[in-house]
Image (cartoon, rainbow, N blue to C red; front, side, top):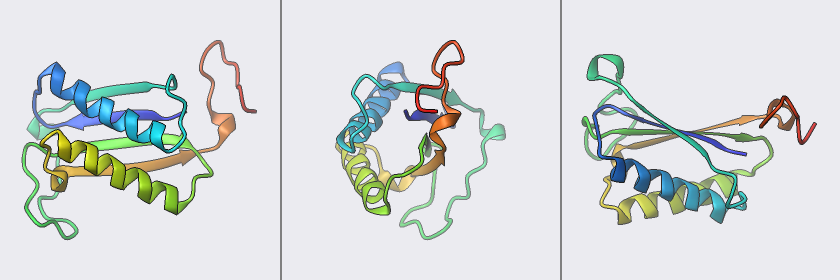
Amino acid sequence: MPLVTLTLRQRRPAVFKAAVLDAVHAALVHTGVPADDRFQRVITLDAADAHFDPHYPDLARPRTADALLIEILWSVGRSVKLKRALLADLMQRLGALGIDTEQVMVVLQETAWENWAFAGGRQLHA
């Protein structure tokens, strides 16, 4: 039940956004998320509307206009081990696309199962 949000600071071609979202989804599926459970969105902000510290906390290279913010909202209950595996897999996939993973920030946010209603207000897991 992940909801993925990709935030960019500059306009990117549709093929780039699709490739990033495909990589995120493949990494999620690799952790056990069902293949057809795909809910994603892309937000593109002007430079004046997106402020990312260029160095925090310990980047090998400063963040640039190419920085990506990937937010994954998913149900509670996954272990730290699984989250680390997801991040390692995702970085490998993004790196294979030629993306500098030092430019990628990922935020994993958890919510209780009863907070999801996919359609018609029906809570499938409440």
